[in-house]
Image (cartoon, rainbow, N blue to C red; front, side, top):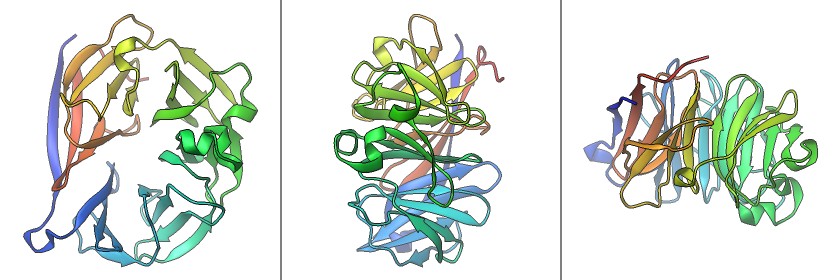
Length: 276
């Protein structure tokens, strides 16, 4: 397997804003970058390198995702029963909100709605988080519940990794046995693959056609792996740095990563990767 990487820095903290912290980052080929920044206790959006836009929300561990050209989603990962998912416009104004559960691990957005995965404190807590994986529409109505809607599927004790799939689907890598599960929220079905040991505990992944790419941020070496789904062994495909997550299958790039100072896109050139 011949694999090469193309990496591009898409955001660097300006000299005049070195007191800003990069909290989250998003990329879409059609809309460009969305960077969530923090200054003191204030949060700001930076859209496509424009001047940061402040917004007024009391957040602790926020996640930011783009919905479309004019709407963004901000989710606070810890919450009791209060609203913690907010739909916002480019001016930082809130157009809708709902409670998305507690102990949120990751979020991906598709045309079908908002997928939310949960870590162990949410799964073993109470309320909607117990489902491990939930699909909401953009008003907060629940469309799919993993544990309730799927029979004979691996239990999610902690959803380590979540990646958008084709159509109304996502891929998950749940603790404790770490199968790779392809979940369709529309048909309420799932396909299960036995994942090789080398990708267990990955906390970010990107699935493109017949290949999955997996990265564990806690590993000091920064290696990530390419695995032809259903085959025996993954192979080291390169190195990534910083907090990393996989992008949707329709994107040119595979991963977005950020450190304290910059945001980077990674595109993987794999001669054996087939797009469906």
